[in-house]
Length: 285
Image 1: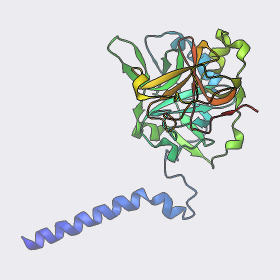
Image 2: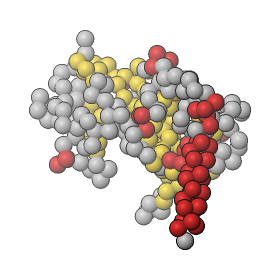
Image 3: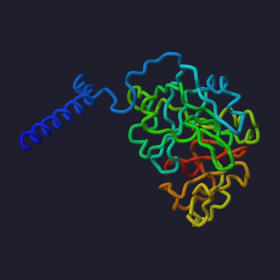
Image 4: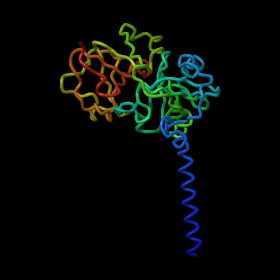
């Protein structure tokens, strides 16, 4: 019995070694560590479309507010990360932009900023993922149907995501454009459709409720999404939306004129500025 037990222990140890060696093949072949440890390094660039083209191809799914569409074509997008969960305000999602438009990708995983920092270029294979909207905001993910029967793209399994993404090169923040938000087009539906999901800056605006002590997202004022909206320039359709879990949730809102950077998403006809960290707002010069 002892001999059999000893043999089983040896076999188990050998199997473990094989498994570890298999997982580390890339490291053995590339001891410099230039092969990314996350994602599918077997993906190659084929049939890359722009985000603008993707939205045009699936425009029907972006206007139907009750369902999603499965992407059946073997197509890809190539874009850079513009926002992640580093500051706790974007939850289980990243924003990406390829210069033609922005998009939200929903992933059921925390700490995404660790391998998807702002400026990281990625290649995403879209086949068998789903596209649609949440509150009119275009998103990629897997379907989730709420109690009202509304289906939207929600957080995909992290393992599934890793099969569909490849990291390209080193992060380069200088390759990301922060667009100027045109306040004169705040009610322009075409402008909203074109720019929702993009990294933008609103200059010289005021936070209506700022009084020197009122914070961005106190627990007592949270809504059903554990977030708080703060009006900008008194506008009902332009808000800074902050999670009560954001690192800056307890920070007093600045008074006077400020410049605010963030991912400009939409919820129906309202612009929502999702700041990424507490460096995304400052006094206007």
